[in-house]
Image (cartoon, rainbow, N blue to C red; front, side):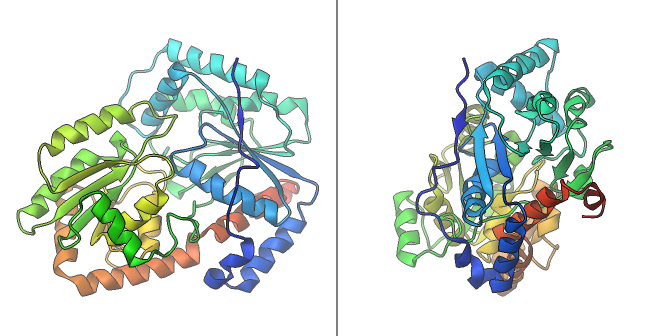
Length: 420
């Protein structure tokens, strides 16, 4: 028997909506409250596959309490599945990103078996059902129990070049939703339902993004035996093939030939990602005995540590092979850090090359950009300042909430869905 997890009431010590005025102004907050008032009497139920690890859980953990504060009855539930189910959904994840993996009829059977168990046991109570990513997609089979209920499918991953077997399997569910949401225009697929572009966001007041005292940063560097006098190249991400941590080590070693620097690879795991332990082992093997490569497996709740490691970095890198959006990039840009990142997924939406960061296409390109930034600190500083302002205008949580509120309202007026 599967036990689902409800996350709706676990929000101690969070910021209030008016705390964001200092970043976006009072008029933005007033507008959010006005939009929220139009949803009075409607319940929003978010469902995803994990409550910790990854950007989806992080966004929901920050957004749900703010929506509740401004009067939108918002909840968050998590499906459950066994090891086999998450191994299959990890295959889906890889194949949707265009990576080769083996998939067979048994895998689809495992997915459907767990889906049916969740359909049977999940309490569906929202006026708007907000389903995140492929893992819970099959819950749409409950749509016809209440014809007035609206269903949204939110795709947080890069599906610009998906494996067709997996995509066609998922598409049979997707087309039953009232609308779909993607993070980048290039992820759009031919669908018979409306599609919307809504970029993810970061919370500037979360522990991962708020300002830190220099002593806090120094203490964390000391905790991990990191030399603050030596230039730091830092990548923060889950240990995932698609984040290419092995390629980051290759880029670091090219830079190391010219500049005495160090590399910090820090991140954690997610309950719905069974591959991370294997990837971590490969990264450790690749690093060998190099004392200037710091591989940090951070437990859940290490937001202050991540914040400090990003703030201490001379250059932040995100050398992803595929990327749904790249919130670790957004976090670093908000901290006015010079960022070198792959030109994939939603990253080019955030970085204008040589204005708010540096985009790269290879190990050699990443190394070249890192060397340029380490040799030109004033240029690196200006990139960081440009980047922070771009995030303030486009990628903070308040903008994200506004987009969702507008979409929720549009679901009740079909003519608005087309023109939103």
